[in-house]
Length: 366
Image (cartoon, rainbow, N blue to C red; front, side, top):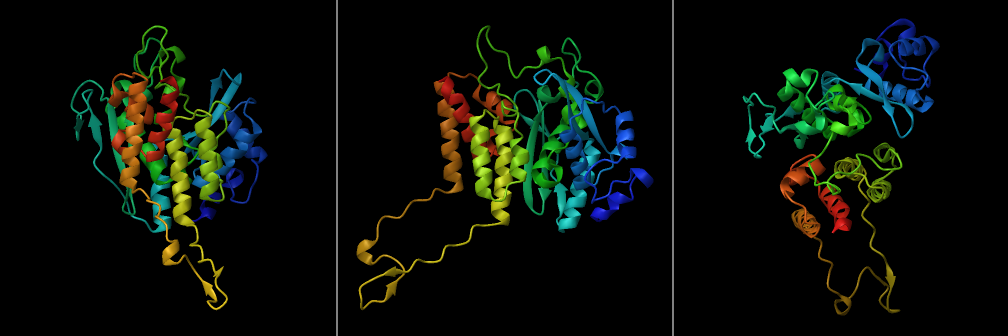
């Protein structure tokens, strides 16, 4: 399938064409009938059009949606694109085929409250979490989704919708969406699945990360995105090189972004660095004695101790040690559970940058 294929979907005046830069009157009328009211910002509509073109999903065939939810901070509906997990799978398989990559999965795992993982869930109670590993071209992308963070509830805290009948399947779908977004960041950035976003409509006073003592702040509970509302991840995808992504990462960390969000930015930087590696600098030619011409480095007498570059394993171990020290200084209880809640994944699966970012967020409370 090519990028021109989207022009044939929907047909007629509703066909989205790769070259169009704004919604046509006919398209805008249908979008309004689908529930998009006048509170939608022009930037949200423009971004939605770009997303439909990039993902090649058709909003007029209900493959992708623009859903408005009331935002108390902005005092208006904020519109977010979302699709189903099936839409995610379509995008992922198509992107893998276009790149000539193999796409596969490991068996889905479910976790019980004690932390034990199972390859099948037979308990009548919902699992504590699910883990899905996507394999793209031999590279593994694992993600963990906790039931308590994604379950859709009604007033009173009881599960609602499909989370009542299919909590195991719904939790696994959320984990799969996270893993697919890690494996295909450029293709799936900016669009979330309906399974992930179901909890966005939960009553605000019913959503908690963990129980805390009266009057005690929860150091594990941090904002999902930066306080100022900047879309740092979107900026990272538009960065010219890995150095620019590093700058964006630092600004997001200073602004209070959670480790999971920072980890996504870090993955974009790694992908850029892998795709556009920094050129190896040419050896510098330094003037020497008049009869020596030029030399390319220090003489034996000038050799100094070389810098010891830590291995990735050492770097990871140091990051974990920093996190444990920060948690101990802050007198946080239940380290393992708190880390999974904050990182959105087991410590063993978390990127080093995300671990260090969490340690930095906990440390001021020490």
